[in-house]
Length: 432
Ligand code: PMP
Figure 1: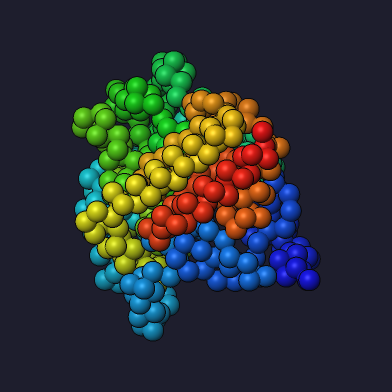
Figure 2: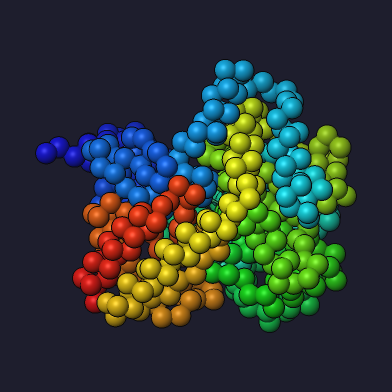
């Protein structure tokens, strides 16, 4: 029988570098043929051969309601009939900004853009422009998009390729980017002691989904908050992945429940706020945001920014996730998945650790959850690849790289979870 995925991959490779428009899709880490998606509905997608998969990627996070949610589909169809893009302001942009600001108290103003990369890049420029300082601090294993200044020891696809940074980024461009170890309080204290007056911002993935799933510890977040306040640097939460995914208040809501009064100064958002359409945002305190053009001297712009179809999709998505009980149900589904996987691994004697928050999860083929990137890197790659392919063969689609978080949607049923756990148990038995 012909394999349409393989045929498409061969065709794609003739014209598109690596056959894909974003590196991790190429299955380079795990080997084999990427699945070309034909269509998706609810918790499933079907590949070019008509094979169905239970989808735990959900477009890498945005599809929190599952694919093709009727209310979202209707909103998008209606918006599309009214026009695709105007390059002029619309009411829906105002509505979306109002929704985001309502749900995330640290945000007083937001600007909408089209990708998480743009949002992260613009945040760094704004932080530097507003503070008049050059130095930025990021953490090893955190990915904030592919802006030059941030392409230092990022996780995700870059981790897969083993490049500490990217070719094409001159050292001068990253000379003001300090990279520290995640969850290392002593290092951040030393950095502020030495460079405090030069630090524009500290940017962090509060739950780092680009090294699978590693939480920033409470003492770590608390100490960064104190140091940023003390030295007038901005604390930036990159919530592109965690925003409206780990809870309605996002990761910062979770940390505020553990650290009374906690707020970041700026937030980067993406994924869920666009519901699967190209939409992202960055925001923060009014005094900082007013440095942006046209009010201030920090330039930032976009032809498709605040796109009317994308904002319709985002608004409809945010409306659904605010329904009573939404996150309780999503969290329970995710919890049942990770508990099931853990029990299956234990039963088969496979070292395994899991964690989750809201609709985001991660697991490691090691007995303890790692606290930083160096430990994440100790995972046995060959074992992960065998698990990935074993699940894929059984119709379960997880991230094709061990540095990536997984995502559960509201469309995943108890039967889907049971089928996934049963498949995993079979694969674990073969891994022993
Ligand atoms: N920040 C984080 C935390 C991300 O996970 C990602 C993408 N996975 C980005 C930024 C970049 O977003 P985008 O791919 O939309 O450019």
